[in-house]
Image (tube, rainbow, N blue to C red; front, side, top):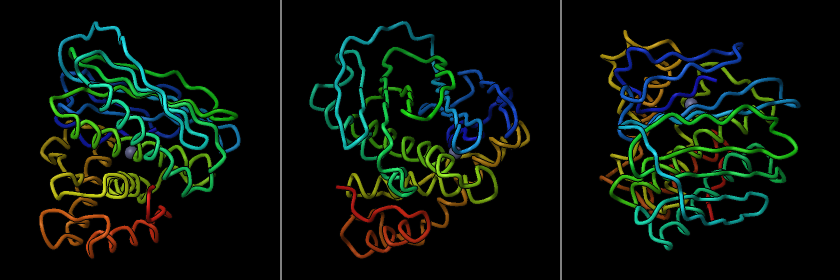
Length: 275
Ligand SMILES: [Zn+2]
């Protein structure tokens, strides 16, 4: 439910469900930004939670079939990255896989779900856009999650998108599995915070321009409430995290970085060190 991310701006037809519905209305893909928009649909109570996802990428209809895959395992979390050459090199796919596994692990650990078996599929799309939905299925005994990401031109930027989106969406999933309230004013800011914290902890660096906050409030009148809330929550958390920066970027082990990671630990229970 209600976790359309940052980049869905100016979407006249962006509709989505709220807490009680069983379907997710998907925005047209020409209404989302270049980085795509992502949602997680959560249904049921903590013990019988079901999880579905949607990924919306802009551009002409993608028709490619992925030809390469790489699988990696971190504790109970298995990640498979699928792509078409030459959008990623094999080495970049290995790094992406490891980063995605760490980004999923942090919110799960923060919710004491260390033992949860997870299968996470990351598909890199290099020939356009489309809408991909993963039908809802029970989160237990195995949590299955899939998202599709635009390849873009830059493997580092792609990895950062995957880390922040993964941590954001897994924060929603993990807190729901742990029985925490899924709605309320704090949920969406905390999910954005999870994205920023994971980026710093995993990549070792966070730049100001990577903070959430690209939602354009001029689009608010066109957006349904949940998307509006999400966009503005991203802007608010981005503004508040600016205060942690003394320069344009921080490192995991410098003064600014340590202060932010402490805040991540205190506010959403993230581990200070990712690896
Ligand atoms: Zn969200």
